[in-house]
Length: 139
Image (cartoon, rainbow, N blue to C red; front, side):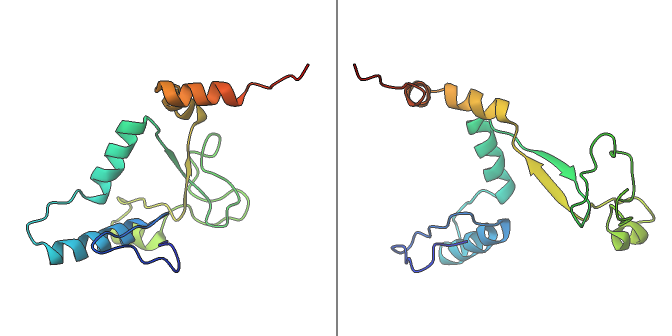
């Protein structure tokens, strides 16, 4: 979502928490202004950010009603064991004769290990993390 009430100086656009659709629309608008402009796709930007930061995400299928995540021991199930809702988009499944299994809902996890490793990777952030754990004792 773009920052409300903020007008960035032209020609830059500043958005925080922007969606893939927002990125693609902003890219398209920039390309219309400068047709020779070569921009990275959303997936290329996402991959570069992942490569530079070292932070990865794990995606898991989830019940449409958020009852359960289809992870072990529910990884092989086609329907939610709590409410019976189908795991996959039924229209996609039927149109592809069972070939395309598109989950109805996905949740993403950011494992803590790679996040901590990424923070300790650079001396400034490592020092900052170390100092934030220190307590001063007044004598």
